[in-house]
Amino acid sequence: MQTIDQFNFAGKKAFVRVDFNVPVDENFAITDDTRIRAAMPTLKKILADGGSLILASHMGRPKKNPDPKYSLKVIVDHVSKLLGVPVRFAPDCMGDQTAALAADLKPGEALLLENLRFYAEEEGKPRGEFATDEEKAAAKKVVKESQKEFTAKLAAYADCYVNDAFGTAHRAHASTALIAKHFDENNKMFGYLMEKEVKAVEKVMTDVARPFTAIMGGSKVSSKIEIIENLLTKVDSLIITGGMTYTFTKAQGGKIGNSICEDDKLELSLELLAKAKEKGVNIVLAVDAKAADSFSNEAQTQFVKVNEIPDGWEGLDIGPETEKIFADVIKNSKTILWNGPTGVFEFDNFTSGSRSVGHAIVEATKNGAFSLVGGGDSVACVNKFGIADQVSYVSTGGGALLEAIEGRILPGIEAIRGY
Ligand code: AMP
Image (tube, rainbow, N blue to C red; front, top):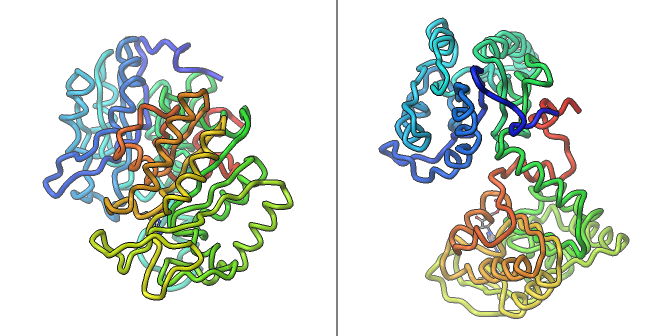
């Protein structure tokens, strides 16, 4: 497989799928440019070689073409500044004018295309409401057909294809996967960011130093169930925390007061515990909770046993005994995966558990463990606690990371590797 380091972009036009889906405020000012900065090593290498850039991304979830609320125009100046060259903007990712702009690109120049998702063909999903399933299926067929031409037109702008958008690697969209078929194996590759992401996931999934501990937090069992099941075949210890705690606690007969709980997942959580036992996986659950008398940062609080939460109270974070138990498991691990907070970390009074998990991971990393942190909320946690640079790898992909860890083959990765 071609790697970006081996490739010489001199005189070549590179179609680079980036993830410039950055958050903006009501005045369209970028509030967090992490994703743009993350693509810079790839983009700078291409320009330094004497190549030119055709930058393509989605932003938000537009429902029409054009949808000014989601125009990528608002990031042009910032991308130019970070890249150190003026970036031209194509106000439509299709059309003769855009094809001409791409054709005119000289070595060292860059062109940013308007939001790919202005076209339904990017995702290959029909828009609008449909009265029947048949109508929807027929509309889908039409989009899938026109998606071929859309993809071919994007591919025709460039000599080579670089995918550096790990955040969308789990989507088989025109620009993230289908386009790769238009380039032979010597002219398509991962960007540096994508390469790092793929390596980090592979390290956790295949080249594992033991003990391997995964910390799964967040609110719902239902959204994490497949990952948890998959992890049972891989990890030595599995810390199940966050809002999921209370579904497991109730299933085992505990009193959880008003804590978040999925009553239709009680059976399932018992089955998971049984499966873990069968496989010899050490499941670690909270023993105490920081309970609040309302869902608010200003609530009254008390530490209680996790299975004795009084009526009218709800567990919003783990308690000090649990912090210690979790930290001991983490510090004795050689591979660590963290996805999801231990509590409602958005409220300052309920960050302690997530903070202590973060610090235990930092300590384990200092002692030689490989630590991978991923999924929106855990990334927000390590940023909030200022420890992002003290773990081995912070993934930019939420859904993509979780799907890779579930053991699925991501279309964006498969399209480049060819398997
Ligand atoms: P997820 O999107 O499933 O990863 O869940 C992340 C969210 O779970 C965060 O917004 C947390 O505030 C929330 N969360 C974590 N622990 C709790 C809890 N004990 N009660 C309610 N929400 C929680």
